[in-house]
Structure formats: C-alpha cells, structure tokens
Length: 159
Image (spheres, rainbow, N blue to C red):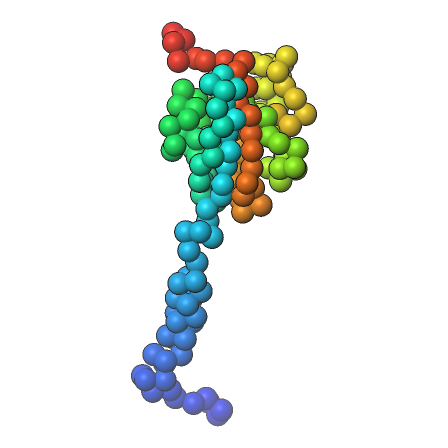
C-alpha cells in the first residue's frame, strides 16, 4: 500500500465540506426574480388585458389559474398509466393564440394537443394556437403575450 496517505478526520471533513460550500454559494445567488416570467393574457370575451407573474416550470394554465383567470379549464393528465387511463390535454377550454415572436419558443405541439385543437375548435385554430396547459414557462418566454379567444368552449355546466 505504498503511496497511500492516511488522512485525519479534520482533513476528511474539510474535503467533504468544500463541495457543500460551493453548492450553497451557487444556491444563494438564485433568487425568485431568476424564476419569474411575465405573462400577458388578452381576454377577448372580457375585452381586458392582464399581465401577471408566473414561475419557470409552471404551465400557462397554472399561471392563469393562480391569478384567478381561466378557472373553468382543466389540466392535462400526466403520462398514461393503468391508474389514470388518460394522457395529455382533454379539452380546448384553455385554447390560446400565442404571439408570433414567442410561438417558436413554446416548444413543439404534441399530437394530442393538435388533435384536441383540430377536433374541438377547428374553425378557431391559428398557426400559433396552443393549449395553455401544454405550454411550460421558461425564462425564454418572459414577456409572452397570448390571446384567449372568446369562442373557447365552456364546459362548466356540462353534465
């Protein structure tokens, strides 16, 4: 065992603490402002424009509902499994039209999202149509503006 050096307890603790201090310093520099994203909703039916803060990782729908907007809409299911038997978006109640400058930054439109839009609101689909539940906020989307069409279906009284 030549070349091995026995480290004392103090040396081991110091070596273990170094990465922890570096991580704590990096975490300490992160602020809420780093995760905040400004979102503007133009509510066509109410003829009002509302700008609200969202958080990176929230969907547009979660952001809207956090601020009392689009309350009748439902979230997309998680990935399919035998417990939920569902996957993806379920209705076009949260259909939004994303401003052209932000559309490419929203990520790809999934086939389920496209199917819901084409089946439920085919006459209102635009090249920049998305479902708010499928748009996950990133820092790139800071300042995003979306129009909530007045023609969106309302399923609150559906039975």
